[in-house]
Image 1: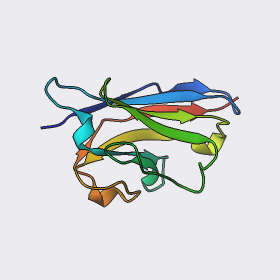
Image 2: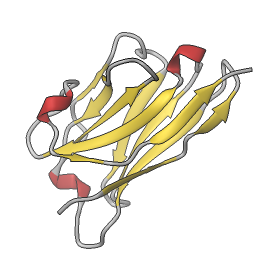
Image 3: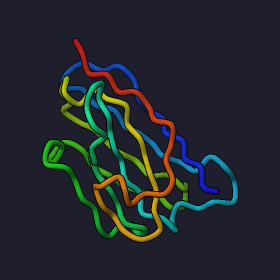
Length: 125
């Protein structure tokens, strides 16, 4: 079964940047069979879709709240998907999760079969 692991979270000041990574934690699994989505959940709020990328990277989508600030990309040779986050705001503070599904890039969590454990992003001065 595919297992995902996120990394790259941390504490950053407003206006700063972070790059999150999503990788398969077990050998033998390749992420290029999967569309990957990034989701986040802040305390007391529902999980929301942030961005997604198709299996070959030709299609991406972003939530309106992050358009122009976040960029999703994938390096299938490295079996990793990235979320570059720039111009971070306090409201970006959340646990960020990556998720995988075999079929499509979408920002609704119900379509994803595999999830990582999450990485905390805190934007604060």
